[in-house]
Structures are given as C-alpha cells and as structure tokens.
Length: 454
Image 1 (cartoon, rainbow, N blue to C red):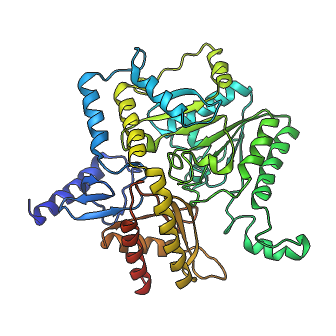
Image 2 (image 1 turned 180 degrees about the horizontal axis):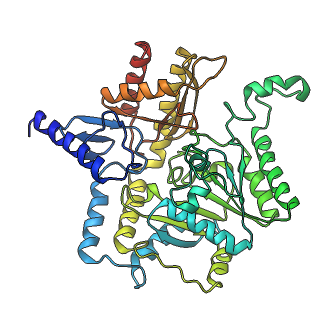
Image 3 (image 1 turned 90 degrees about the vertical axis):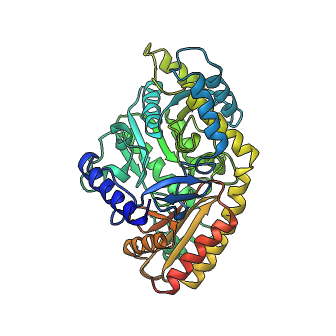
C-alpha cells in the first residue's frame, strides 16, 4: 500500500473513531495521532513501517510481541480457555511462582483482569478486615478508573469535572522533595531554626508526620482507619521516588491504628525499580495487600491482588463468594508465567538497573547544561521523571514546553509522554529490555531539541 493510500486510511480511521468511540477515550498526540500496526522489542511501527522508539510503554514489560509470550498464549489457547472454577495447574503455578518472589506472609492470591479491579478488591478486603471505612490516599495519586478506584485518585476526582472528594477519603501531601510541602527551598528557609542542612533533613519522617496527623484526626472524629494506599513509586502524580523511611513510619502508624497497608505496584512493580522485584522493597517494608496489573501480561489483560491469610479469611467469613469470570483463566496465567520466565532468562531486572543508571547519568548532565529548563531528574531503574520549568529560581512548571517536546520527539521517531499534576514532567517508563543504545537515542534527540531552543 502506498503512503497516499495509507494517509487516506488513517484519516478514515480517525473519522470512524470520532463517530463510534467514546468522546473521553483519548489518543496519544491528539493533533496528529499515530497509526501503529506492529510492535517489536522497544519499537513500534506505523502504517508506513516507520519505526518509533517506545520510551513509555510499561505494559510491554519484556518488549512488544515477545515471541516466547506469544507462543505461550497461542499454545494455551489451542488447549483450553475457560474460567478458574475448574481445577487447572496454571493458576496454581503462577501463584506459586509469584509467592516465591514475595515476602511472608503475602501468599494468598486473587487473579483479575486489570489494575483498576485490584484496587477495587483491595478496598473491599480492607473494609471487611477492619470493619472501618476511612481511607488515606496521596495527593495527585491515580489508582484506576472504576468508581471505587477513582474515589481513591485525586488525580481524577480533583480535576475539572471530577466527582470531588468523598467524605471517607483523606488526602496526604505528595512526598515530592522537589516542589512539595517539604523541599529544598522550605528547608533552606527554616534552616536557622532547625539547625539542619538539606542532606540531614529527614524528608521521609516529615512527610510521614502528615499521614500520622491525619490518622489522629480520624480518631478524634470518632471514626476508624480502614486503609492507607500508596504507589511504591508515584507515577501519574509526577514520577516521585518516595523518600527514605516514608512507608516504614507510615506502616507502623497505620497498623497501630488498626488499618491495612496497601502497596500499589501496578506501574512500579516487576523489577522496574532495578534494585528489587517490588518497589516497596526500596522502603524496607512488607505491605498487607499488594496490587499488580500492567506488567504481568506484556499487554495481555491479567492482574493480581496478593494478601495475607488473615485478611483473606476475614473476607471468606463474610460468606460472599469471590468470582471473576476471566481472572485466572489458563491463557492469562500461561502468559503471566511466560513473562516471569522471560524476565529471569533475559535478566531484565538487572538490565533495568544498568540502563536506568546509564540514562539517569546522561539526564543529569543534560540538567547541568539546561538548568533553567530541567528543574529535576529523578528515578529508580527504568522509572524516570524529568521536570521541566520556566526558570531555576521560581521553579514554575512548564507544561507547554513539555507538550512541545513530546511532539518534537515524535517527529524524530521517539515516543515520550508527560504527566504530573501540572503536566510538566517527561515520563520515561519503557519496556525493561530498553538498551543503552536506546537511551543514547532518547538523549541525543532530546539534547538536539533543547539546543535548538525547541
């Protein structure tokens, strides 16, 4: 097919999408959407087979269309694809494999289809376990698109047109050490009083104290805490890496108050942080509930919630049977097992650490060259954020600059996106097979765009 014919087809697809697809279902690059026909490794290909380096697709954990994962899916589809009410080895094998990667006492599994569903179930289990209703969330957090998970997501309910905060939701400040409640500027301002340098200041304790204050307020109001939920690395809220001791101090306080600690690993888990398989391990904590989704199936819809014996039993004692038509089906489990096998065989967690460090170092050098454009570079493994600003003194966010950059990068065949409460943070969350050569391509193009004054 010639390029002209492809363009006509693309225009027809856009027209049909506008006619038949929900108006709120967004596309990347809405002014000039990409028509993608194929994926392989860290690359996507458009209708003319131009290749684009994919720097944001954290769903394709082991790379687009990995042949081992495709094979596992096809082979199981030829045998059986049904619900999990029949005995079948795949669901048990997957639970057993994942339990070997989790700390005790996390060994009770519920399999679902999406991260949003796991958030909903985590909320339900917490309510049954604690007989309480109050939940603490982090400002700007996103935990899913169901009504229940959107209620836990300031990223959604606090936006124009959002439903607003429910009475049982309590919002703690985002532990952003660059521009949050406690940051370098506020520490410098209070340094004479505190007698502490920036490096000595305990950001984790400071931000944890805000959560502990909310717990005290809940008790004073005569209510009880059901749960505290936090992404182990905050994604849509701005690619935030939690300060040391943050979760450790909060988990202690939450459990003392009778609440449940929920670690959302939907975007942060599966070796993405480089140091550990689970990002909560960066904080040296063990949650009561872990939710996972995106990375499990390399694009196939599969998710899981893992919890303790005690929490699982409390829900079972309610005599409400839990059943998910597709969750835990043999095909989904075969795919998820294959993803874990590929990760181990190709040593992708170690690759995430190596390439992530390499890329971060290059971005730090870029920040030094353009301090009035790049305010902050932060990340762990292949979970990286680049904060764009108007100037170094005011730190005013620059979402317009971020928007220009992602379109300029698209012209150069590099897919990147932006997020954060101000939309000014370039997010980098590629497949875990991302290479140093891929990192070079990303940084080379970003450098040239900045050198050319955008």
